Length: 278
Figure (cartoon, rainbow, N blue to C red):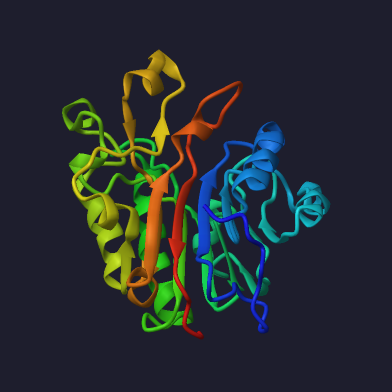
C-alpha cells in the first residue's frame, strides 16, 4: 500500500497513486482507538469507514483524527451502534441516517462525498434469530438501504457502500455452512436482500478479486475461532462499476485481528486507480 500523501489540484488523490478505501467494524472505538490510530499511521488509507463506534457524537475523537490528517463525520448516540467516515481527501455533503422511521434501528448509516466518491458507512442490524422481530427489521433495513441509494445516488457515478452487512453473501463466505443452518447471516431472505442492494449497481470487489477463495472478516472471540479459521465474510466494500473497473487490489487485513484486545472484525481494503469525476 502506498505511503504517498500527494493530492491533485482538486483535492482528490493524485493520478499516479491509487485511491485507498477501507472499512472496519472496530467493536468500540473507545476500546480500540490506539489500534485504529496505529493502523491509520501504518496504512494511510484515503478513506476509512468505521462501524460500532459505540459512542455519542459528543465524545467522538475528531481532534485525534485531525492530527492524523483526517476529516471525520460521525453518527452515534450512545453505547451501541455508531458509524463514521474518516477522509484525508475531503469530506462534504454529510448525511446521517435515512431520515425516516427505519432510523429507529439506531445510528447505522452515514454518507459523505470524499474526493469524487460518494461514500457510505453502514452497520446493518444483526437480526438475532430467524423468528425474531429484529430479523424482520434487518430485512426492512436492507430494503430501505436499496431505496436510499435509488433516491440519493446515481449507479453510473463513483459510489462506495462499505461496512458490516451482517450477511455472508455465499456459502463460501462461511467456514462451515452446515454449522449455521437455521441461523441469521446466511438465510435465503437475508442474502436476497443483500443481492437487491447490489443489483442497484454495486460490485463486491473483494470477491471479484479472489474468486472462490475462503476469505473471512469476522471471527467469534469464543472457542479460538480465529486460530481455527472459523470465520465469516460479512464486512464488504461494494462499489459501482466505474470504480470496480479501476480496482487494482482488494484484501482483508487479518493481521489487524491479531494481538492484544483486537476487534472481532478485520479491516477490508480496496485500492482503486484514477477515479473519474462524480
